[in-house]
Amino acid sequence: MSPHSEVRPSAVSGMFYPADPGALRTQLKELLSRSRPEERLGEVAGIIVPHAGYAYSGLTAAMGYSHLAGSDCKTVVLIAPSHRDFFDGVSVFPGDAYETPLGRVQVDAGLRTAVMEACPQITLSRKGHVGEHAIEVQLPFLQYLLPAFQMVPLVVGHQTREICMGLGECLARVLKGRSVLLVASSDLSHYHPSAVAERLDGTVAEAVKKFDPDGLMDIIESGAAEACGGGPIVAALVALQKLSVRHITVVHRSTSADVTGDHNSVVGYLSAVAYN
Image 1 (spheres, rainbow, N blue to C red):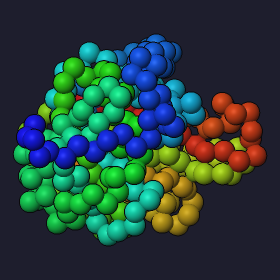
Image 2: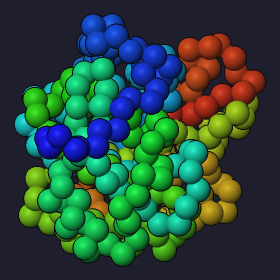
Image 3: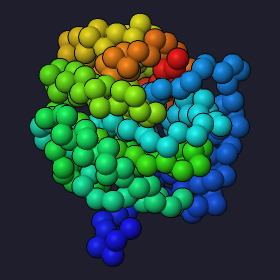
Image 4: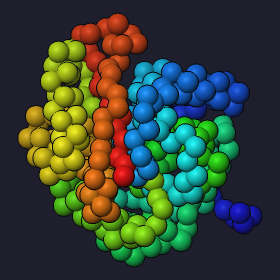
């Protein structure tokens, strides 16, 4: 790394997950030990995982990430929503690395250039990166499970059909022939009673199970479902389909009520694994 490199420091350690490296490793180990899959699903090409604090969605995230155990994946493309910045298109971090308590994750500069050249939706920008948690909370899981990897962090601004579908299509063109893991970061419905959340989140789960990005975009646009990272999920599903990935399994669903006991106002979570 050059003396003038730019590293994006952790913004939510100590809030969404432990700031102490030892405590963080202990929590990851405990979550993943509770999430060992009963069966291997094949070669994992993509996962959908939540991005709330580990106390709330960590187990659901671990249920997806546990399928990466033993993987030697070297490149990860993360697609996340923006909760703080509002902008058109998709931003890719212009710096060299993201930092967490477990160390730095380098940006794959060559692949970043390739996706920018292929995807007009993507611009080099710090928008959606500086204070955003939706990518950062995924990194400790990946650092714990993968021996060494680089990443391309993508944040979707306004999640229009054109942007999300187009992103998926152009990522598929760039990633064809490469060994890359796609990670879509998304929570589901927010602040409904449990019964309402079950209906809304079940609709998203069914669209994911059907590997149906068009259907998922339809229900999100109509309000029949909620997912703060619905656009990233759609983009990932489009890319995975065009990369000839044929199987996807929803491996876990939960809500914040499973932790808090409050069923009056919950947030929904889902993890899914796409594989060959």
